[in-house]
Image 1: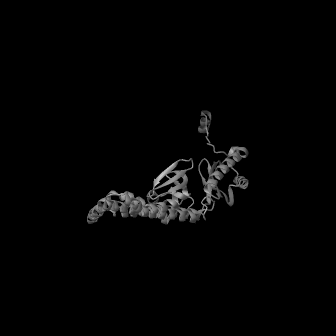
Image 2 (image 1 turned 180 degrees about the vertical axis):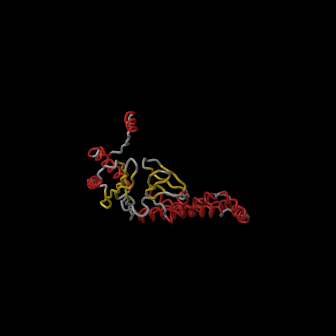
Image 3 (image 1 turned 90 degrees about the vertical axis):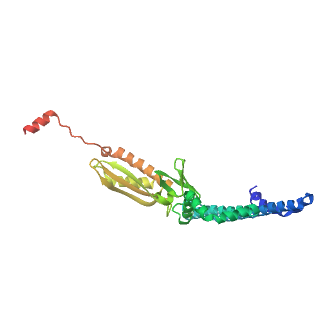
Length: 312
């Protein structure tokens, strides 16, 4: 069915356009009117068939070229780049082709052609009015084209946008769909990614660093925590064996801040690795250093101690 739709249908339309006059004219009384109508219909069918064939050729060429690149692989940076460019540019080209086809079809009629001349005569004023009315729509379309060329985001990129973490699922000329980690969809205009800041975790590579923050008392054994972090990382396939660091990053009046830094092949694995390490380190502290959990120290003096202290 897909084959017929793509290849046979345009050919059938062309054949119908060529044979329509021969099949219909012998049975019509008013040949002049019928000939005029049939010529118009045949011309429109030819334009439709050619337009259809061009669009199908573009889609097939894009699909055939992109089959060489697997967007589902771990190291898919080039694939995501090409998929983004081809998908957006395909929509732009098809839109232009459809506008040209509609224009050519309308120009076959004398009344429309005369109307077009009057429109072009007042194009200056009309252009200004349309420009003001459609400036947001035009800006959105231009932003979509800019995303396709400069690519601040690509398909399957991991973003943190509007406080949400997810993957770029779809990019069109006017909007971008971000698939949130809990399967919700965040739909944003393309201008958002040109005008506002956002985090792109896979801009240059799918590899990513994960961080885990632990807060403990001052008397915790840092060396023991480093050994436990190494043991946890070596016990899971989520770690890519590149980064393994544990540092004290801050000290406050009641606790110290410890940061565990680790690496993974991609963002989903980094998320799972962070959860695994966080849980493992907390269990390790609970079991081996329960006295090192964050605590609040309060010094209480009774009335007798205060009087004794005053006398002294």
